[in-house]
Image (cartoon, rainbow, N blue to C red; front, side):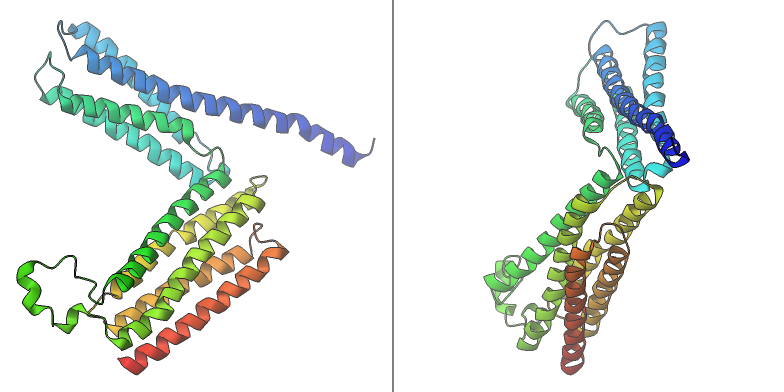
Length: 322
C-alpha cells in the first residue's frame, strides 16, 4: 500500500468521529433547550397556585434551572468558530433570546401577587417555550445558516420593491392614503407628488433595486447548489458572503425612502451609489468564492453590467434635473 493511500485511509476514522461528535452536539443542543423549557414550566407553575414552595424547594428549583441555563449557554460558548461565524452568531442570538425570556419570566413572577397566574406570566412562559423550541430548527451547518440569512434578505428587498411599485401605480399622490380630510385643500402642494423628472429618475433606481433582488436570488441558488463546509476555506468564504450581503437590504431601503417626494436628487444619487457599491462588492466576493462555478460567471457579469448601467443613468438624470 502506497503512502498516499495509507494517509487517505487513516483520515476515514477521523471523519467518522467528526460526524459522530456533530450528531451528539446537535442532540445536546436540543436537550439543553428542552430542559430549560421544562424548568421554566416548573417554576411558573410552582408560583401560580397554593401552596407556595418552601424556601428550600425554591432554592432547589433555582439551582436546577441554573444548571439547565448554563448547559444551554455552554452550547454556544463551546461552539467552534471554525464551524462558521454565521452559524455561531445564529446560535448566540437564539441563546440570548432564551436568556432574555427567562429573565422576563422571573421578573414577572417577582412583581405579581404570589399564588396567582397572570396573563403576563402565561405570556412570558410561552415566550420561553417558543425560544427554546427554535433550537430544534436551527441551521445544521454554516451553509444552511448563510442560506437562512439570504432568504430573509430576499424578503426584505422584495417588500421594498413591491411597496415602491404599488405607490407608483395606485395614484399620482403617494401620500393619498395617509392625508386627513382636512388636508384635502392642500393637495395641490407639489411636495406630495412625483414630477415627470422624478419619475424618470426613479426608473434606473428601480433597476438597481431589482438588480439587488436578482443578485440575492442568484447567490442563494449558487450557495444552495455549490456551497460546502468541507474545509475552513469554504466555511470562511460563506461567512464573507453573509457579511457583505447583510448591507444590501438596508441600502435598498434607504434608496426607496429617498424616492418619495419631495425628492432630493443629490440624496437619491448618494443612496444609489451606496446600493451599487454594495452590489459590486457582493459580486466580487461571489466571483472569487467556491460557490461561483464557471456556469455562474454569466449572471455575475450580467448583473455587474446592469448595476453600472443603472448607476450611470441615475448620475446623468440627477445632474440634469437637479
